[in-house]
Amino acid sequence: MKYLRWLLHPFSMLYGLAVIIRNFCYDAGLFKSKSFDKPVISIGNLDVGGAGKSPMTEYLIRLLKSDYKLATLSRGYGRKTKGYLTATATATATATATNLGDEPAQFKAKFPDITVAVCEKRVEGIQRLLPDHDVILLDDAFQHRAVTPGLSILLLDYNRLNDPHMLLPAGNLREPFSGRWRAQIIVVTKCPAILGDEEKSAAAQRIEPLPWQKVFYAHVAYQHLTAMDGKITPWCVDNDMTVFLLTGIANPKPLLQHLSGYTSSIIHHNYPDHYPFTPKNIAKLAAEFSACKAQKKLVITTEKDAQRLQQSWFNGALPDGGDLPVFVLPIKVEFLGDSGPDFDQLITDYVREHTTYNRIH
Image (cartoon, rainbow, N blue to C red; front, side, top):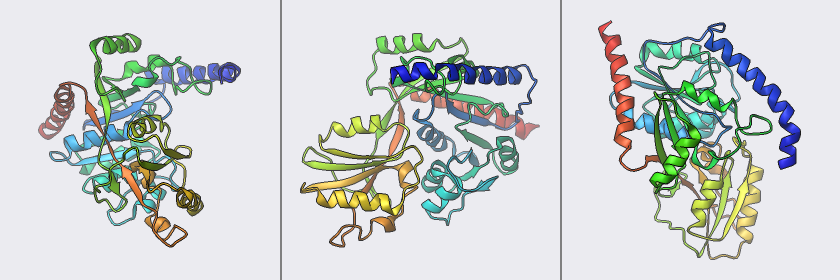
């Protein structure tokens, strides 16, 4: 892998040059970037996937949805449609994932009362949403320079802070690490649940935040196992349990690490990020599940992956006609220490200030 990275390094230099020129054109005003009077909050990262954008978007939804008419706007990665679309409350999760992408489908499933929209052209999407909404949350929009958000939240994976700052394709960065200056808030995600001052100081030295940037530290909090129909179950994973893990996400390592704390018997069916699961994939899983001699066993998948799965694929999937027991493991963002209220205050102050301004003017 090390030698492959070196072979790809010239391509990374060409890619980086193109990104630098593009960013310069936006920064210098040669390319147009549109700002808006109403609150527009961008959530994004510098790496390719896996920094926790969806859980952070959900955190903001929970924070704001009671007081403001809220909409999320995504590109809709992996969808089979084009243009501007909004999710409907009546569509199934898999239909929504097909039309809008798995992450918007997840937002709509968990928060049916908010507007969930997708559009490749974010300016167009925002313009269509703003007349009827108070706040727009832009999911995965840090590199979408055609929009200048009022507030930009940059997520950095704690486990990747010490990785070389190498651009695609040799590395994982979408743009140079210096691009972090555009964020007002930096959240270091996927931290250990307990992070000492020395570790925070080392992380801050690696990030080198600018004077106006606020830095927060957060970890992933795994919730109770939930059946595919949404019911919380009394299932408990222990060392006598064999877990069949089904994932199609960018970075399943933290999930594997979490489950390894409960059982050493994990059989991982690992697929690429946003993988469009098929009945054949489930048939293969069901065959291995049936052949497993363990007395206690179940299938676990992620919320994001569940949007691309159909419950009917599991019904009667086992050779004896039984249903394949599939459970979803939800996650939430939790800020370390007592920093959560400070983060919340920054967000609500920004939203309140800009919504008040618009009501006055």
